[in-house]
Image (tube, rainbow, N blue to C red; front, side, top):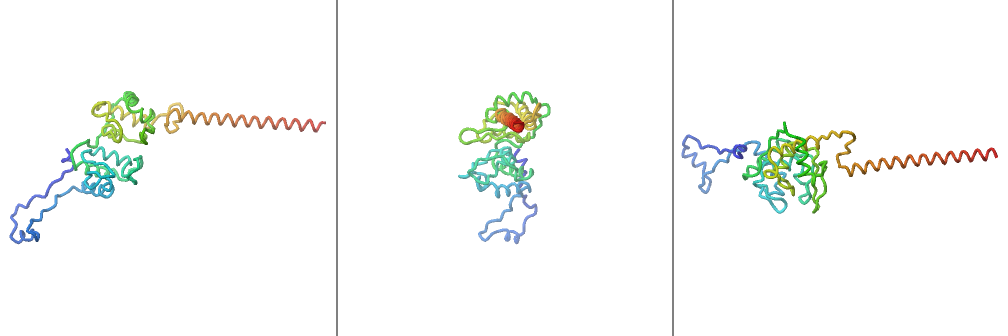
Length: 270
């Protein structure tokens, strides 16, 4: 499959026998025959160039890893696609914790980088083609509550974990990125597929996260960013108590003004 993606082919030898002069010209000073380089598909060459310019300083030339970044060999295109398309990579500071941000590359460039890395060593998952038609959002919600809400919170807004780690927010993710996260298990995330979840269950979770978490209906009120009941309750309490306090101060000021007016009238009549 990887070979089919990459489509690398070597230049075939010429059908005609070379002349003696051609043979002489094809030899170097040491007498070694100069071999032609393999023909590399344009997008694969672009992927290698983009990788060398933006990723190799941490992950090394050939993606074998270094002291600044792990090896990417055998990780598969889906892993690289997730980290690059989500903006987690490349890092401006190698020691910083990855955080969501805009993708620095176009979709075609991202796929080119992912396919180049995947072609270096077989392994991992290819970039999935996701179709959530017919998936059960209700079943996905139950599975999300059981397996994902403990770290990402029930609203998918993310949360702080131990060891100065964070479970990222799931808002704004597309179905491909959600699927890639489930099947590749980035960072400290548990691996749910294959094993804990079936392919149909993965589709249910993806449908729930991309629809209800990514685009909540907020029936009955304002979503307030989907930060959960604690944050929303605090905001409600702050606004409610603040409004009551302002109203009490206004009533108190009016009472003082009325009493002052009455005292002034009494003094005038006296």
